[in-house]
Length: 139
Image (cartoon, rainbow, N blue to C red; front, side):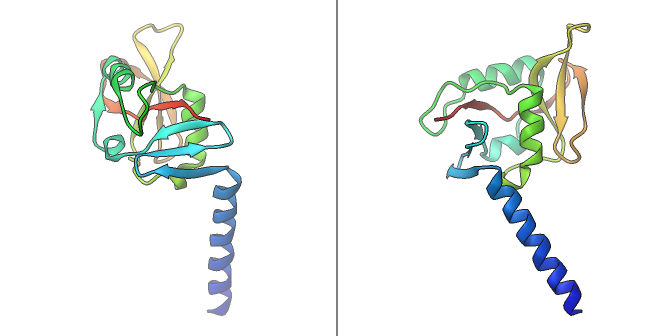
C-alpha cells in the first residue's frame, strides 16, 4: 500500500514538472500562454462546444475577440500537435478533433485535424465539422 502511494506521488510530481517545464501558464480564464512557443491559446468554453466546417473555423478565428485581442487565427497542424503534448494545462478541451489551418497539398478540399483524446491526426473533408481552438502570437 505504501509503495502505491509513493508511486502515485512520484507520478504527480513528474507530471507537474513536465507541465512547468513546458513553460505554460494561465493568463486569464479564457486563454493559456505557452512561453516555450510564445503562443497564446484560446481556452474558453467555446473550445469544447463549438463545431464548424473548415471555412467556418477559419472565419471564427478571424472574428474572435477575447482577452482584449482580435488577431486570432486557426493554428497549424504542428502547433496543435505541440499543444496536444501539453493538454494538461488546458481547462477546456474535447477529446475529439480540432481543425488546423494546414491543408493537404494533393487534396485541395481536405485539411488536417488533431484528435486531443489520443494525438491522432489525419485529413478530413473541409465540409466536415470539427472543434475550433484559435491561437495568436503572444509576447
